[in-house]
Length: 125
Image (cartoon, rainbow, N blue to C red; front, side):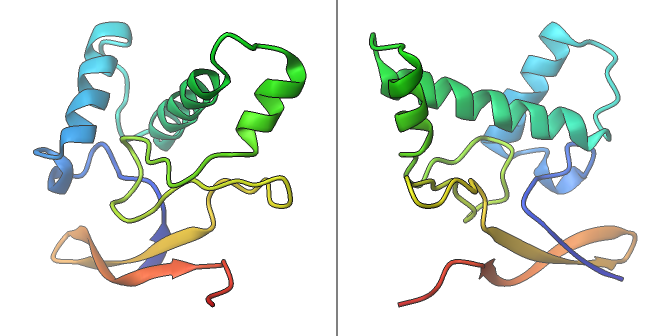
């Protein structure tokens, strides 16, 4: 079985020693004890929240709508803790899609195994 994605699976043992997933798990243990970590929405929400924090950091003290939106459209190689290594968030005034990369997975020996290069929707050049 093959699939592709951009998020780590919190219930997958391959990430147990990953620094980013350790931060995620500490957050879950502190603020959502007993949460079902196999729910991909938790991992996604954590990445989205980290991205929003980055936007606000970039905005600094200028928290006007215009500046926050400008910063949201100015993310460069930002990597939330729960994204698969090599996948980054990039936005611009002409491209608001934050994630345009995937990594292939195959189900092997009872677990998902990453393989191959990062697949990018961005034009190479």
